[in-house]
Length: 195
Image 1 (cartoon, rainbow, N blue to C red):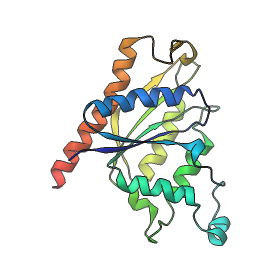
Image 2: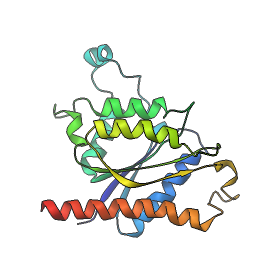
Image 3: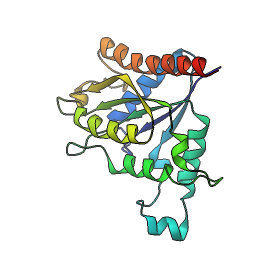
Image 4: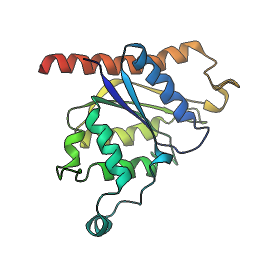
């Protein structure tokens, strides 16, 4: 069985460092035969979550579309930027909406339950978004996801890429690809154990 991974970067910036590190990590998964569903949050605008809005207007169509991809996925790969020491509002908002009722009326939390998840990050600062990773990992565990131990934080990201947008340091590239590879490996083992 081929593994399907949902890849989400918590940034909408056109030249996002986090989208770049996500793409590298996802390439490690693809190299092992995984199918990667790439979600660009700029393509899925939705209002800030609140219960009143949900009660009057329901779950936004763009959240339902991401839920459909979550249902199709065996694992999730997330790149989390760091804003003032925390993860981004757009990433939290997406997770909040996706945890709500699906098209079928079932709880959105079931789309996350017991799926492996990996987190990578990048930042112009020296810690590479490590503080944001702490916060987002708490939320991901609360959603019922299984965090793999491998993660990666790319510090000083503004100088880490060449003009073509690829990483200058091949060892860093290898480490990022290894996150995607590990995600596929664990997902395959879990699937084998439950068959």
